[in-house]
Length: 226
Image (cartoon, rainbow, N blue to C red; front, side):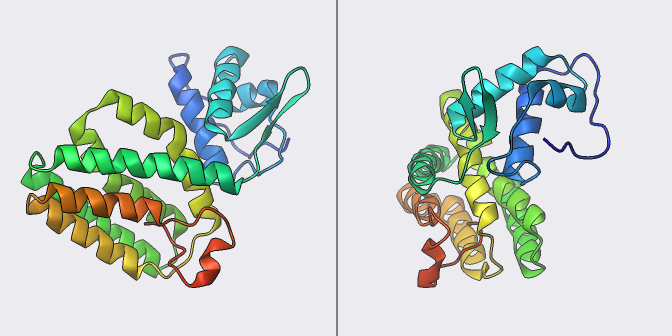
């Protein structure tokens, strides 16, 4: 397994969650590609930790569908499987629908302002075809209602299945994101106006409309993040 150059070594206080997130992000952003074998010893050396948190992280990544573990043989990065992505997408859409419905009327002016700022950065990133910046801004945008709601069970579901959807988004990223920017603005306006039903329905549609496989954007739909 080729390990990226440079060192990500951190202090002994690195928690299991930190190891999980670093490995998750490396899979989502394509540092580790589908079919690549992941060896716990090499990963531990790369991160500057023992093998134990790495092995625990790989188990969590397996539950999320990002890696495939063959007992006694190897652990590899999973392929982007359309049915699995579709299932994860539908669960993620339902969680965002619930979060938006429950949080309507609880967002502060500062929260609304943060969402507008995130969408401006998203629009700029799409315009410049900056995949990393677009997906980061999009994640921040949708994460604000989730964070304000503070439902730990909902957050745990998104933590498990969201990365699978994000990886598929990145693989299909396109620059035609104008519709997504407009949907974001409409969602903000509905939230700002206290329309819980309208905001929840739009949040669900934004996520549910994401194509689940690489061929799904051939029908002309926006292939960028939503």
